[in-house]
Amino acid sequence: MATPDNYRMLAAYNRWMNDKLYACAAQLPDAVRKRDMGAFFKSIHGSLNHILVGDMLWMGRFENLPFNWQGHTQELFADFAGLTEARSAMDQRITAFAERLTPAWIAAPFEYRKLAGTPVHVAGFAALTHFFNHQTHHRGQVTTLLMQCGVDPGDTDIVAMPGIEHIS
Image 1: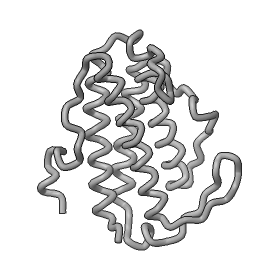
Image 2: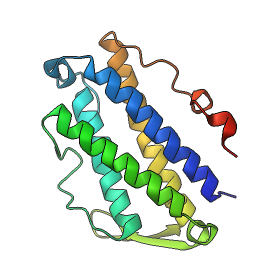
Image 3: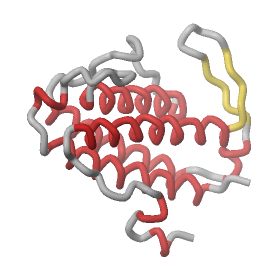
């Protein structure tokens, strides 16, 4: 069964990986970060932006603070500095939310509406697991794009995260 510690670990991993990927992306000129490379969201910038959009949508659902969704390709920040700052703030928000999780919240039914308005009813752990899986999925795409630009993000395995041996 999923526990609050599981999601605290995933929040720590999320932050670690975002810090790594943003540091890697910062090595590239803006034009390269925004170049259409044929990915789902075209570019490194577009992919990082999409991850943030998804996080804002899901955190809005989790905290009952609706996010003004304008589509999968909604650009929150055209400039990398703004995107980086917003990413950092979101990672702090995710970490704080994970710290507040309880076994009861994780096990309880979670209700939200799909973007088309259809209601969805799942367990809290299913929604949380999807949230963290979505990030990982798209960060995997970003690592590929970075490698294609000659920037190696290094080991991305959760077991390589510094401090993992101290997480219970």
